[in-house]
Image (cartoon, rainbow, N blue to C red; front, top):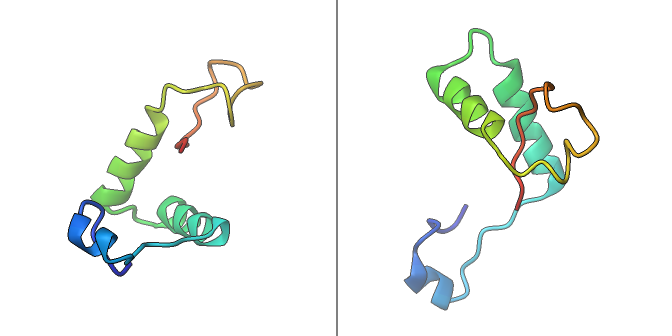
Length: 72
């Protein structure tokens, strides 16, 4: 990642961060598969489980199903 999220000067100089669906899948597999799971992975999963927007990925799942996801 060539710039920090809020590095507005880098953004103004057209330095951007890019990723792909494959990158995100690889990241989530690594977070999920870590044994023993480091505290940062556990914290990330808890944040993702707290997502309240349920009209996309978990739309047709029962509300009792716990899903770790992020919209946007």
